[in-house]
Image (cartoon, rainbow, N blue to C red):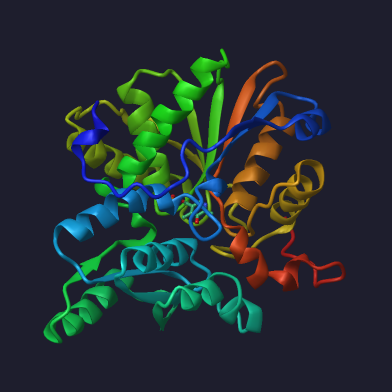
Length: 340
Ligand SMILES: *Cc1c(COP(=O)(O)O)cnc(C)c1O
């Protein structure tokens, strides 16, 4: 398993720290909780897309691209990290932002990640929710190509087999850190959306026979669909690495019970998780991904599904820039979030 065979632009601050969450562990009274700080990957407030982009942007460079395109929700962290990476490499960047929440809140539409997209010099255009965003990207890319641009199109979330290599790499990094401190990891938990993070992690974990079960907490799709998406991408990733069939369908586990009313809409347990991490550990989560992932983690601890004495690692995938687009659900006397 030799990742050096794949082109890569080294930009992320790696390895990200692996830290123990003493106060949160005590508060929940169950397992020992650790956190893998992929919110600290270094690029424009950090996040999980940076690891994927190290491999994707290397491909873009190899094909001589002068322009990159990608798509995501209005408050997409992936769009923001792509814009920053493109700035660093001197490429133009165009982002298609899908209105998945229907929010007309001014900060949601202009602040947080959207503000940073523009600061990094990216251009953005909006699309209505539910459109075929991949098709929309191809249409825009064709237009740019007809104007003489060399366009590299990155799928939503950077989730293809190339991007997932970033999380194969994360799996190796995490296991190596755990080995160095004799930390036996009983469970690894992460938010899962466009599937690249979970697919890369499970491929890496299985490829080195780590024996660490991985739980993805869904943020959008129902369980079955999410697991299928992750499994398909894991198979492609394993094939790319030269170890096809290393991931079995049963290795892919997602729980979509914490999505609530829909993608990008936090509910009471999302907000509670954000507050707990902020107040007990000084760590910023986000209302779309890591807040929901952490709500799942907290619930599994409370229900005894993660047991006393076990060691659980929560992979923090970043996203705190989106907090500034969600002040309306986070400030003191805000309207109540959707009921659980
Ligand atoms: C994109 C994202 C995720 C989900 O990762 P996928 O690879 O899309 O499944 C989780 N957390 C944050 C903060 C993200 O931006």
